[in-house]
Image 1 (tube, rainbow, N blue to C red):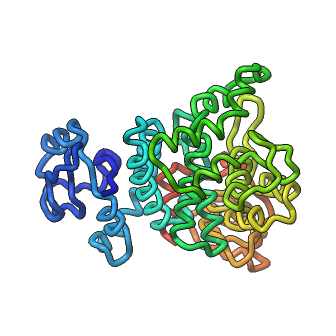
Image 2: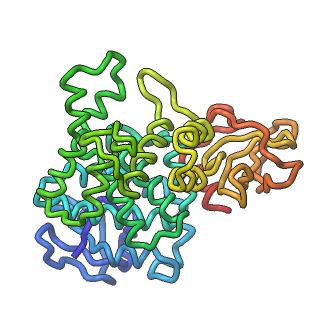
Length: 379
């Protein structure tokens, strides 16, 4: 039975209304069956304090079109930002779980995050590209989720099956398990690496596999990808200097590099998706995996602020038929005056072509994470 914490799905609970999933105690004993209600805040707080759990397969069914919550799609979309924030906390809890709980925690958080991605793939990409205002705390955890989201997007673009997409997500999520805290420190460090830090970096693929193995993870493809994600075909990688590198490991390496460039560090600003894509293309021009990653995001991914040939400024809300032709929600008119109601523009038309990628602060209106989610979900 796969479970995740009740606290991670608290925002899906409507007090006094039938639940769409079962609630279990921390020892998996059934507390509330699907269809029963949580009457008030006091009861909810009591459940949260005792570490109540949710059956993930029921949660996933509730998120699917036609599922028990199909009538609440609009409400769910309005709460996408809050759900992503809660999901990030669930990821953090999973990555810091004790060995005896790590496997179940990873399974639960994977199901939860994939259900959110399925709900709005565009919102998932925007989370990676924009580094949302409300995201805070641990760089290593944030980067793990961003890399996992990127791997899943590339795997989906390539037409991989659901099991392979899930494995790509989980492998990317855990590839840096052995150095999460070091990653967080290095993100704000401007001094050169110490010898101990360098050794820890070189050893982290091995350490990550050891931690997964201790948790009972026995998926060889997953473990091999984590172990090899810093190996390169010319043998110059680490930890073993291999020449023969698996396909999933290669995808993890590219996702690791690409998403790291989208994040600011103490010694450099964040890159745009276009710049990160160019660098990745220069590094791996012949790789269909790198190409899939770049194409899955597009040159102007959802969440990007752009200027159109018409003079309008808008927010990219989804990819178009070509990487450089996204669909854009125009936030201003041609004179740069904010619109009361945004207008959807197809940038494949010459008069609405994207002519410039703008920094996020160039938006004519304040784009909170909630506003971005509403614009993306409204298309």
